[in-house]
Image (cartoon, rainbow, N blue to C red; front, side, top):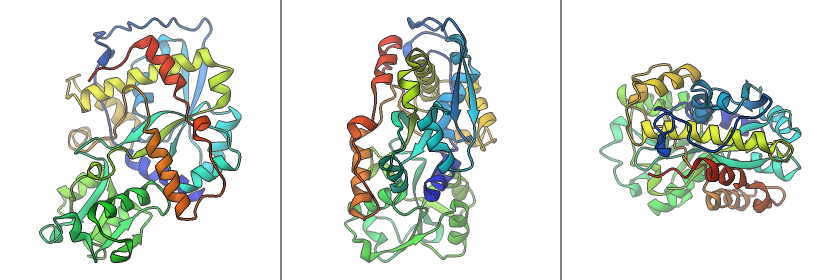
Length: 356
């Protein structure tokens, strides 16, 4: 559980990077809410467990641009000290929505009775500009060019039996290099990876934004290709929903998801479609996350967020199988029950599908 928490805080540390645009985005609504959802008759509060990670972009944008308010929803952000507190709170309905990072400990918590649902995408890599990818030491960039060149090298990864480990394993398979032919260095702090690079203690690292860009600017490391070369659909984080929220408060949940997706679409318009919104979304992201430098937001690889909400279901199960093969899973999971895209689908029926 503690490793899962660290993963949330760390991948969140840059899951600390994403964001910006205008209102109706891919719906072609020119700032007007053109969906058929009416506001709730009575105001409803939705509690979101969110710690300032950039993967929470949809929440922040929907809040600051008034999308939740349009449906008469008040959102409250709650911070938890660790996942031992957060996951049971979601399962009990004390928290309606939260974020989850793939790891064996996370899946084990669910297998042991923590009842939550995966209801939307909250983080994946964008093709060619991954926010979570490998970097190579600056002085080795001419020696380590091809994937096969990682053989015999020291590679730092922040978590064992987490999504980090999974991406590392996918990279080695792509390189046709055995795990026995490299040195796996477990280094839980991404900042320490930067120091270890500078001290020539490691050769490569699975690093995260904004440290990837900052390290490049400081001449410490360079990007090593891109994680989407070998893990194009790695599902790094998911929006979690309380079963009570999805059933007993369905009218609230549908409107919440509609507002969330509208926020994600604004984000996608700015960062993926490069639409100009006069810096509004970047300002929102800088306000809500640890990355306060608005100029740096224009350089970093941002968190991918699906404007239609869907997660990579097959990849979630693939990660689970990887952890299971490593002997890190205790118990079986029924993904047909855990992954619930019905709320996304209901919201899409009302606000329309985002067209790329």
